[in-house]
Length: 20
Image (cartoon, helix red, strand yellow):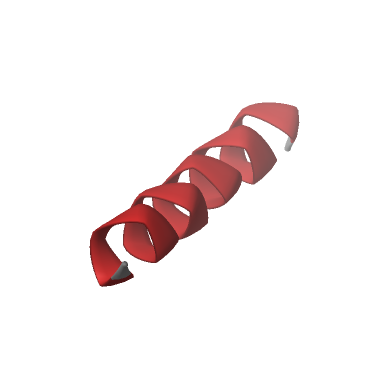
């Protein structure tokens, strides 16, 4: 499902931003 993929990608970006 594309929705799940997009959601995971967004979550990963948010996590990376939080770490920075």
